[in-house]
Image (cartoon, rainbow over all chains, first blue to last red):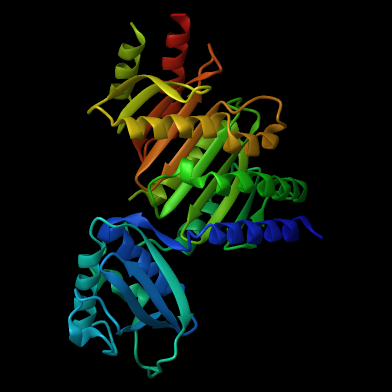
Amino acid sequence: MSEFARLEEKLAKLRQRERAAGEGRKLRGIGADALLAAIVTEIDETILPRRLVFETPAGAVHLAVANRRLQALLPPAPEAFPAALAGHALPDVEDPAVAALGDALKSVLEQVEGLPVSATRLTEAFGSDIGVPAEQLPRVWTVAESMALRPDETLTQFLSGLDDAVAWLRIDGEEIAAHGGPEAAVEALTAQAAVFLDGYFSKFDVAFRQPSYSCGTLISPGDGGATALLFVEIAALSAIISAPSASILSIATTWQRMVAE
Amino acid sequence: MDITAELDAMRADVQGCALVAYTDLSSSLVLCTSAASKPVQEEMNALSQAAQLALDGAYAEGAEPTWGGTSPAEISVLMTGAEARLFLRSPGNPAEALVCVCAADTDLDAAVRQAQATLQRIASQG
């Protein structure tokens, strides 16, 4: 079994343990702006027809999503949502129901920390011309530009600038999606990642008590010549990076400036 | 200058720094704090537990093989989109550490240099 396969198997077990602990999947973020941006990202990452269910304090919000498009708010909807919105197919971004749905979502996400989400197969059928592309939602939902994060683009851009790293692995969910650095260094980092992530996930709640859309963890021996470790997460994407201690802080600063809210 | 004054000076020098604390890693107790407004005890407990985790606990242990495991973690940073928390082990007493809560986009290189200088001065006071 390759080191990649070992790490992927380990990640699957760690994620399974997270789920077994009853935490479920939760979008990170605090407040309406951050969570609305996270919902946009969730829509943007949904290709197959799905019913996305967001558990807000006001009740469950069901959205029909397919091909990275928001197709409709599905019934049942919380009382805070205008009754006419539920089941109303959204033909394009100019439909007033799109803005009204954004306003209703904002109203139920104020002061909320983290948003549980689940996805099931969509049984309702909408025409192929129905749906608002996720990329158009931030404008009409007035999600601040800095909040409308694109995790894939953010991580890709960050990793492409890692000139000082010894090695790096990009992890999409439980899969090693890409890697960089000399083969031996990548192999060593892959073996190391399995050890680090075991402790990382088991103590996550101690390290990060406030839900956040992105997280980063840097551990360094402080000695400039020695190798240090950085693990970053954004939405369901993550990367682990080994780099000289002398440059790991500037690498982490670059990451933070890309994801700062 | 006493420890509190050193922490106050560091908080003033590091841009976007909201809180600086000096903590005992072995007992997870905060020994001294500088903050714009008095932090609640739960927040201090959480910070000291995070410091222990990041410098001596599971996070540090999981990372140490990266550099051969020949020395303990000296610097850790836990980051979110809202803040960056720095943890630096004291050169004078490995069981103590400096904690700094900064803005998310803080220059971490500069903040760590300031923290190291502060720790050196605290250590020199014995």
